[in-house]
Length: 121
Image (cartoon, rainbow, N blue to C red; front, side):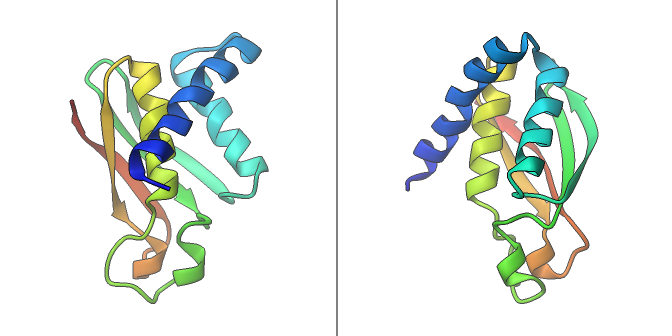
């Protein structure tokens, strides 16, 4: 699966969840994190910063499915699938193209995976 397809998956699910829940912005982001927790993609999460206007967003997730198989074995971050879905989802919420980077990763030995906005396009 190509990166843009992963990003697009996150982008497309935003409208569905917004319509189904009646929520938007940060409230819809919480619904998304709770959903991925229920899917067992993560065990928990923490939203550290969430400002869609700038955008300035940082969050942490524990036991991310992308990275758990590589726990403590890699020198680089390993989440591309989850990062792509989140980038698409948040891009749709903010109505601008947002790219996230993974700054901490359990695959590198960090206690959690951490993502932050890198840039907007």
